[in-house]
Length: 522
Image 1 (cartoon, helix red, strand yellow):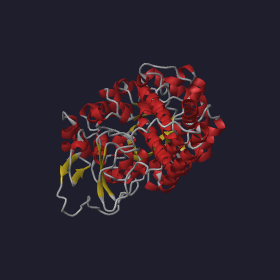
Image 2 (tube, rainbow, N blue to C red):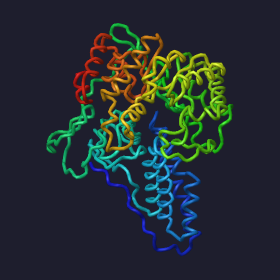
Image 3 (cartoon, rainbow, N blue to C red):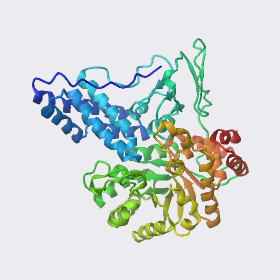
Image 4 (tube, one colour):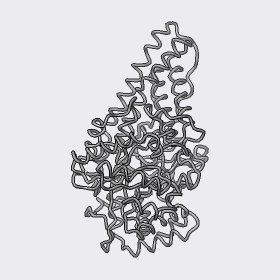
């Protein structure tokens, strides 16, 4: 089933006879869209619900509504054209910012098209009603549409654009739907039926008269809830969370704790910095399901590529390489100090065993600076993210000054290959099976062994049950992932010995490309 392309540009004419009345149509239309997205969020869970709630907030953004209303009253544009132009202006700014904010361009354009459809009285864009199990083919699919997919009806998803670590791809994996993205020329290809292998990325013509076949279900995944290999080598299986909903989903899935708690949700829509009390309450709600269990909280990962109003970031020619992550705090340490105070309070309130880690650390000096502040705030265990190649190369020196490290494979791949992870044209470079990326990870694993300190992975690589074996073989001591992958990864480790994991790791490292690396693991 092919998903229709988004709506085209609405006409700029005719000018409304009553601009004030025309402008008054915009806010109610946005609220209809907000309501639909929030209703969908209520039926979703985990990361899907978080994405839908965030998208709903974008649809109801007062700045978007205000700007569109001004285009109607000031330039006499029809309401649909006004919302289109206002949203496109936001999308252009997000794209120019790069990094995380560029990832939201697809979302704002999806919101734009939904509001335009409501104003024009036409069917909103998105996935059509499926009468039977189907393979969805699309130029791209908005995260909000992906979050609402029914895995019993959608056998696989194939898109021409996007990347392997985009929100759409991540959500598809969380739902258990095989997804192949960045398939160049896909929409020029006519086929009645396709066979899709989400593991290898191979897409083939299929016989349209043959019975529809999905991957055979093997029944419930059996796992005892302890992250370890068949011979008892411990590799903790943890959850990635960014909200209280995510945390509950991870706990329900059997995660042994949290390897990455993203705290940005507390800041995203705040015109001013949240108070320590507000942060403390928000963090406590997320930590609550993990009383007595380990949780690693990542401090604010913001900056020029994730602009927040209260930070007042200066314009930068290349935001992805600018003042982001921990670098924001070097000139304004009070921001991270207040957050650390709130995290320490939330740890006390929740009873979780809380550690903290800083994002975008490049040197041992930066790592030591953060660890000192964390310990001064009363948090005994401090670590850092390994997302920059320089940090991987200096992992031993970094581990000398912190208690642990965690590898963010999405950003580490992006910086290693100089390849934007949202750009379909370079998607293959961001494949987590890339041998060059695995070799950097191996350096971190060796440093962990040498120092006797833990090193985990909290990027999307950890959610692949086969790649998890390679990571364990490289010396990683914990793997953190979305809730949907927890049991599969835990079961994969439990079925394999440590020696076999090390054998798989050595075989993958010896290859020259990701296809060969996958094949080496079998």
